[in-house]
Image (cartoon, rainbow, N blue to C red; front, side):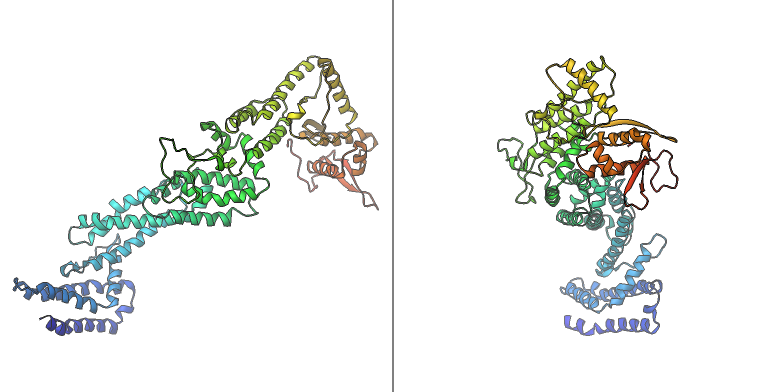
Length: 581
């Protein structure tokens, strides 16, 4: 019987080929997709008719033991005969069926067990629709996206469309099969898109927190952790770790990377893999330590805010981070952790940055230098911000480690009391800081001649200090500090904060005003006994930029002279001076 079925199946084969021949003759397959797809319902119905006609005799032989075998033969022969063009035509028709503006339908092929073809073709179409919906959210990081996308698949358009082409138990089949497939596909595509954008998402953090949480949810559904690490490391190499990026910019991005990846993966495995190239690159930069320390003492820095929010546990370096086997909360390392991974209990940002290096001492030394610079620039002895920062850092670095910093703060506080006492005796414009030299960083001590007026101010303060502390004398470091000055020019008044040397140079022009006020750089260097010509040239360039001095060339001589610009010249290439630095 089976052999006769196979031998006579040519009847169906011939009929299908006849239809194909008619398609080719009428060039229907070469027309637009809309016309092409119109053939699909006709052919599908023809296949259903074939099967119904084939099955009819078998219904009259219910006890025939080879009925299933004959049906299988029919399926095999039919599917082997179906042309490729039919699947294409059926798919194009399904595009119309699944669109929102059509009432078309397609005969169910489930009659002869071929409904899977329709479902697979429909799924291909809906996969494309899902991918387009995912891509429509590219660059949208401020609001959560993934949850609404998954709901749209589970309960919205995708669910309705897919169930509409199922003939038997559509709800059950949807829930058991296609919902999971579509949801997984959506998470895959969404995760791929967000990983491609991850560098920019991190740049935009914390405004992009919603996108970070979406990535976290995606990674719980799809195995893209290694892809995330590889992609982000590549993006960092090309967009961050190069000579064109400043150290501060790299540190800012690193801090944001730490925060984002710990949201995505609280175990720290992803962060450990991504961070190592950044840490290695930062170790090679000469200004990394200084940039990190600057963040410690910058009141606008997020590290200061972080220090306030943390429990202020001491800094733990990489080589100090041995596992505590007696910890009752100990857990094994994550399964995808690398061989060098160590769980650090989620160190705070300050500890994480300090642990880039093997020693805390390099940071303490730089912290002392930077604190000294900040203290020397104080105008009113206000230590509130510095004390707050040092108290936080003492909890991180240890009390004894920052002892020198405490002495520096005490020197400033003592200087304030001394200054208050002296001001009760004399009127003075000087507010010096009296330092304990052995606790302050090495300060380059170069001297220069002060103008007569500035020497008078200093001598007056020295005498008052000697009366207040007869056993001590002041040794001035003239190049350190700042001077608040007011320049009264013919058409403008400038209030500026400058260095002592800058103030001395411009005061020298005022002193020499009776002689025309013109000087060369060599004149200034000789009169002030400046340590070198470089500092003189830099200072002159500063005042030219402020629009206070003007450079001129002597006639027939290649010598530059400088004079005060009493009236601002609108045609001057220099920008109009600002009122403050």
